[in-house]
Image (cartoon, rainbow, N blue to C red):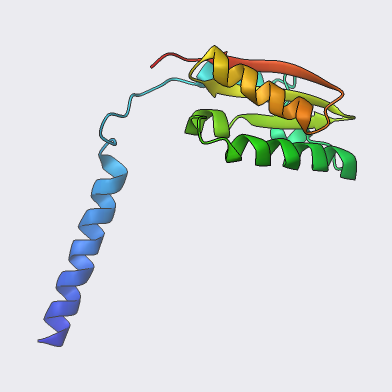
Length: 126
């Protein structure tokens, strides 16, 4: 009896796993980010891998991220904006839901100690 119960559990787990990988999430769209991915690998735009390892730059990025995450008014998209600091200059990239979110994230980067902010955040309407 125990063997049959274990086999049934394994079969159920296998089927659920297979379903999770083959069925799109509810409400999910099939966004094509190919152009953005190509842009990011071209070396023409900054990505998180470009983040400076200088302690001062790491501190600016970390402090900016803390300010962004602490703001309960921001969407999850805004909280996940890329924050990249090199020699005190912060570059912001990613989607947000409004001009207000775009401005707030830039404000937080400045408050964190950025000497200047390059705001490449995109406003994406739902």
